[in-house]
Image (cartoon, rainbow, N blue to C red; front, side, top):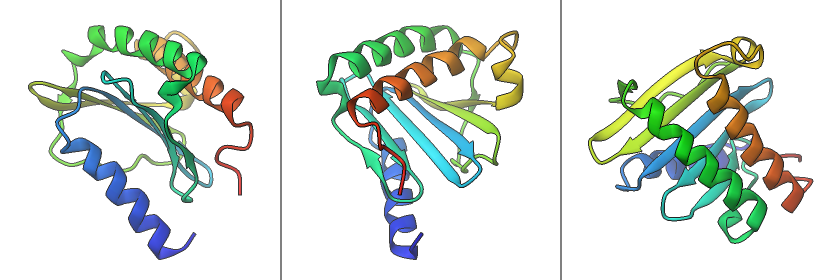
Amino acid sequence: MSQRVAETYEAIRLGLFSSGAQGVITDLGLPDGVATVVTLRDGTVSLYFSNGSGLLDLGDHDGPADRAAALLDLCDEFADNAIPAEDFPLPDEGTARFYFLTNSGVGFLVARATDLEKGDHPLSPLFVAVHGVVTAARRVDPGAGKN
């Protein structure tokens, strides 16, 4: 990954936190980088990878748009319990960070993916919903995130 791509990814990601948008940004720590799933209430659905690849304008497709709407509905029950965020670090490998963008600021919740995958963690439904967005995105472009 070139320094320029990493800086571009980080600039786009950080810009979302100060954009005033409403929704959720989920960072998934993967073995070879980070996947960032963006679902905003204005219909924006995007998938970015720290290696510089990604998919934009997924909200124009029924599958990702429907999954994103379901995720956003689910977020309402978690956002009130989120920890206020002053900075937005990338997650470690095997970790999911959920950033809730609301009228009152940005809050976050974090958990290990192995705990979320078991299905009995309080954030497991959120994790499953995010993966629904990713799965729908990959149906739009099966090669997303692969270089």
